[in-house]
Image (cartoon, rainbow, N blue to C red):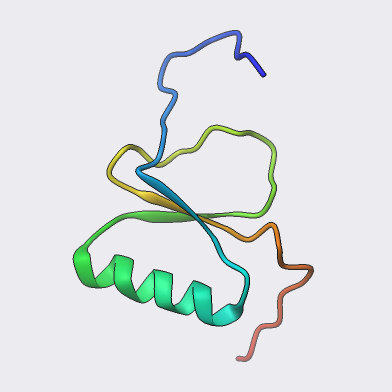
Length: 70
């Protein structure tokens, strides 16, 4: 897929495809511990990210729902 405009296109350092809730928890904890920025992705609207080369994307495409425990 080609973009018509490539200004400010960011590529992450890594993409973590989480298969379990524990994968997400461990990824977030490690990113916070070492100070790496991260963003979630869920099969969204674009193959490009808002996170740059110093960050990671946590890919949630394998998840089919979300439960929130207040």
